[in-house]
Image 1 (cartoon, one colour):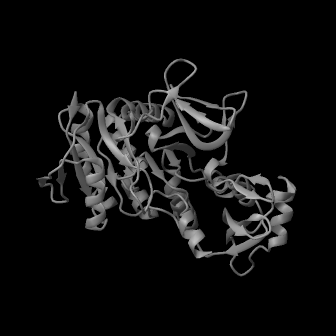
Image 2: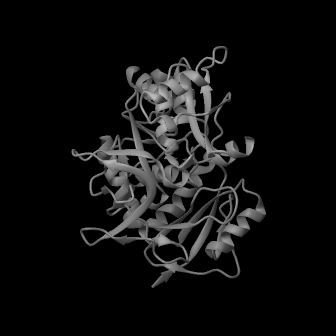
Image 3: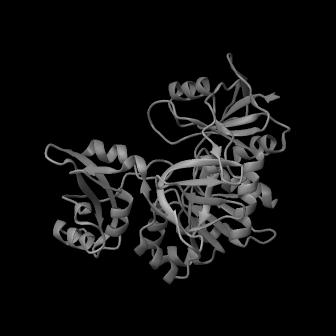
Length: 394
C-alpha cells in the first residue's frame, strides 16, 4: 500500500506553526506524507527537491495546496521525508514512519521528565529533524508548542515553557547574555545537539543551574537517540569491528527514498543502522564519540580523528570553540589544521600552546600543525559546523 507525498513550505522558524496541522495528519494517517521544505530556499532549489522526492502537491506558506505533475507515492508507513543536510547536490531523503517519530518523542519526553501540560519552545528550523521533533513531542504530549524565531533570553524567559531544544551556538550566545543563564535555568530540560558542545560551555551552563543535556543522533534515528551518553529507552548502540557506531531500535528510519535499504540485521534480528561516526560503548553502557569516519585526516600515514582533536582543543585555556580539518600538504598528504575561536580575541592562544595541550592527551601526530583564528564558527541551518565553508575559506 502507498500514500501520496505533499511538500509543505515553512517560512522559517517563525512559521513553524504552519507545519503542525499537516504533521499531525501525517502522523495519524488522515493526511498525506509530508516533505517539509524551507520557504526561503530559491524556487529552483525547492523544485529540484520536490522533483527528486516525487512530491505530488505543495502546500504554500499561505496554506493553499497546489497539485504538481509527476508526483509519486511513498510507502504507507512513511509519514515524513527529511532531506539530509547539505547545501549543494541532491540530498538523501530520509523516510520516517509515524511509529519511529512517536517512539522517539515519547522516549525523549520520559528522559526529560516531562509532566502533563509541559510545553516545548521551538527555536530551531522545523524543516530539520531536531526542530521537527520538538513539534512531534508537543503533539505526543497533547500540548501546543511556543514559537520563538530567535532563541533570545527574553523569548525564553517569557515563553512559559518547560523544555527547549537548541544547538551549541545558541547555548553559547545565551550564556554570553547577562540574562541568559537565569532564563535557561528556569527550564526543566535544555537539550543541546546537532554538533559537539565544548566542555567548558557545558560546565559553565551546569554551574549556572542550567539543566542541559547533550544529545546525539541524526535524521536516520529521528534525531537525538542518546542523551548525555545514555541511549533512550528501546535504543541499542554498539561499536563494530571498524569502530563505527551501530544503532538499532524503534526510532530507525524506513530507509532512503528511492534507494535500497541501508539497514543491516542487528544481533537481535531487527534493523540496524551503521553510522558514519566512530566511537565505543563503555562497560556501563555509555556511548563515547570520537568523530566522523569520513572526516579522518591521513597525515604522514597516520590517521587522525578530527573530532577527538577538537574535543581536546576545546579544553585548552584561551579556546572558546574549535574545529579541526585536514588541509592538503605536499609532504605529509594532509596537515592537521585547528580553526579556533579565542575566548579573548585580544589574547588568542598560540599554536605551540595548542600543540602542547594536545600532545599531553593524544599521539604527537594528532597535534595541529597550523592554527587559523576566527571570530565565529560558520554553521549550517541544522547547527552543525559548516566544514565546506571552512575548507573553502582556507
